[in-house]
Image (cartoon, rainbow, N blue to C red):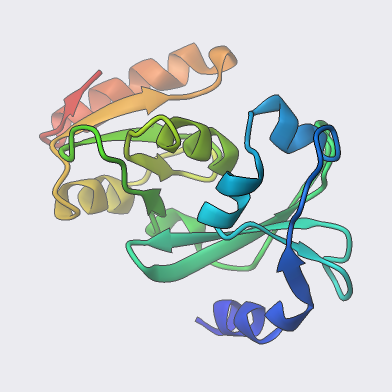
Amino acid sequence: NRQIQEWRETTTCFHPLHLRCGDCEVCGKRFIYEAYLERYNIRYADKGKFKGKMIIPLYEGRKLVYALARDLIIKGNYYNFRVEKKVILPYYLGRINKYEIYLCEGVLDAISVNKLGFTSGVLLGTHITKEQIEQVKQFGFDTAIICLDGDMKAKSIKWYDELGKRGLKTK
């Protein structure tokens, strides 16, 4: 994809994000410390279009499929790269139960789940597409645990039904 290639070519201005306690509201609130920043390859842009932003690359297995930039404050904005998000399902492999995947709304939620040892998928929003459901099955998962924000109860029920209709166990 042209946008991912463009992102790769501009990574020369991305540096490891080194934090002291309290430097970044976003990471501190989610207990994402320096070891996790390194593990998930989270970077900081010091120049260019994303100057001053946290850069989070997303992978399907080892393949880079997406990246996003985010302000370093709690109510900050996300800056998405122009990629068709609804045909990808970035995920982080966990150590616990390789047949279950926790489907999360956002990347920082998915990282929080994964650092506990569970496999987590990043939907980059509150919709799940037929393509993403098929990918869950193609990647070898037979059970999906729905992890949406508290204000998304109705969506969770809808997802539960949709995933079940497509042959996945749900929790």
